[in-house]
Length: 346
Image 1 (cartoon, rainbow, N blue to C red):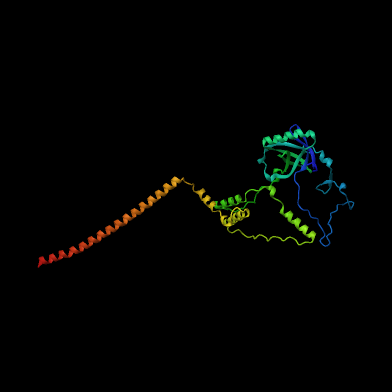
Image 2 (cartoon, helix red, strand yellow):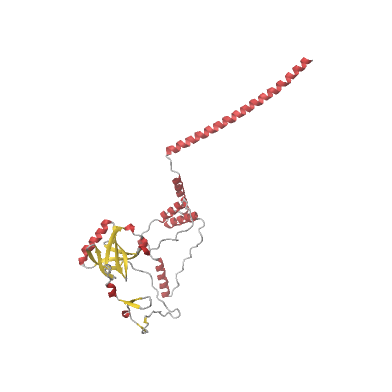
């Protein structure tokens, strides 16, 4: 921290307590910078600053800042003018409130800084503020001026230091209007279960294990060109296209994630247990005793139904047999009576 140059010197105003501090950047960029060149001969392209009135190049020490008025005239503004602004935040980080950390919308987060105690007298009040923030589990909301404008900040504890995140003003955050799909979409439980399975399979990650692969690839290209070697071969682009079957895409994603982690063979990566879980959500499980009773009752009901049906069939068959026998008997008796009648008349 001693080798990091401070970008702002001032004090934290904590009620009547003043804590002298230095503001230093908490982040650094590792991105690769390129220079503009003339493609025909590789010459550097440079920008030179000329004064319009004198038509000559000027140095950095001769350059200041000014405000262009509506009529085009320039009003010079010096650093001394800004230092005399009649606001308390010109050289002070003024704490205005303490709130729970979850009250801060991440969309408001801006650049991050460390607040370093400036000198031995600042050690005690600095430590007091740090420990008070720790014990309260809150963050401090503050106002400060930096680079020509007043800003909003959030102070929180990071290790043994106090960090400050610049915050955008609430009216600088756009509402997400027109961003979400404007068509009605229904998501099924099975699709949600597969999405859950994919998230579980991907699991968590230690952010320390993540690195900038793009920067590493650019460095390899630069090293190869510098050595006159062949450039590294680019991997084949991933096949794109529409996802016609969302379920199949989710299942494939789960299978690929599990195979990449070596958790299960490809054939075991299907999420059939989750489908059963989805069904289980819709229908609550019954105790084993109730299931057994229900099965017995169903068996008895089926047996009784079969028996009743058999009895009805047998009854109908018996009735049919009786009717047939009665019909035959009637047919035999009728000719006998006619014969007796003939004898009497003779």
